[in-house]
Length: 117
Image (tube, rainbow, N blue to C red):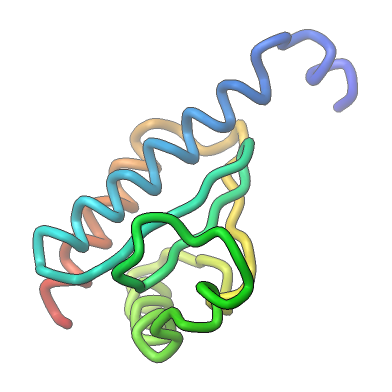
C-alpha cells in the first residue's frame, strides 16, 4: 500500500477533490430542498453539518448544528445503502476506491432523501 501512495504524487489532492465533489453535491441537493447545510473538507476527510452558518469552524458552532436532522439523514441514507459517519460529530472519508460514479450515485441518493424531509 505504501508503494501506491509513493507512486501517486497527487493522491491527497485527488482525495480532497473527491471529498469536495461529494460534499458540494450533497450540500447543493440539500439547498434545493430548502435545507440549511454546509460541509468542511480536509484531504479525503469531510464533515456534513445541518446549520445556517456558511462554515463550521469551532466547537460552539458544531454543537449548535441540528443533530436530529443529521440522524434522520444518516438513517435514510443507510436505508438506501450509503453508510456515512454515524454521528454528526464524526468525520466521513473518501478513498481511492470511490469512483466518480459512486460519488454521483451518493449525491443522487442524497437528493432523493432530502425530498423526504
